[in-house]
Length: 219
Image (tube, rainbow, N blue to C red; front, side, top):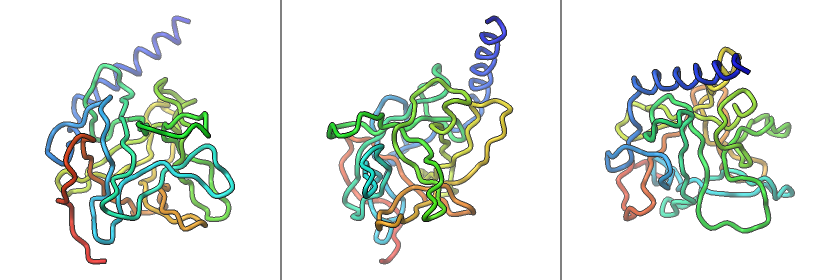
C-alpha cells in the first residue's frame, strides 16, 4: 500500500513540474482556458472547414455516442468542459493530459458518460475514431484512452488535438495527432491520424457572442 501511495504521489509531482513549464492554452479572446468552464471547440478554418464539435451517433449503434463535426460554420455544436490530470492546476496547458467532456442538454437514450475516449479500430475504415463513454479523472493505465493533449499549431490561438497520454508512466503508448475523417455514413468525425493530418481548432467560451474571426479558406 505504501508503494502504491508513493507512486501516485510521484505521478502528481511530475504532472505539476511538467505543467509549470507548459504554456497556457488560450481561447479566441486570448484568455486562458480553464477547467470546469464550458467552451465550444470550433474549426479554425471556415468556409470549407465546417463548424463545431458535437455529440453524434453511429448508424446502427446508438450507444455510446460519438464525436462529430457540424457541417455549418455557424453551428458551434455542443460545449465541452476540460479536466486536468493534475487536480492542483485549473489552467489548461499545452502538451498536458486533459479529459474532455460534452456538457449541456442531452437525451436519455445512452447511460454512458460524455467523456471523450479513443475507440477500438473500425475494421471497415481502418480508423480509430473518438467516441464518448470515457472515464473522468483517475489518471493511470486503466484510463489512458480518455486522456488527450492540446498542442500549438504555429498560428496564434489555434490548436490541434493529440493522443499521446502520459498518465501511464513508463508504459509505451503510441502518439497520434487527431484529424478529421469521414466514416461510412458520411459523418465527419475525429480520428487518430497515421501522419500529419491534425485539424486546427479554436476554443470559444460558451457565453461569448458568435462572431467569425477564423482563417478563411474558400469553399
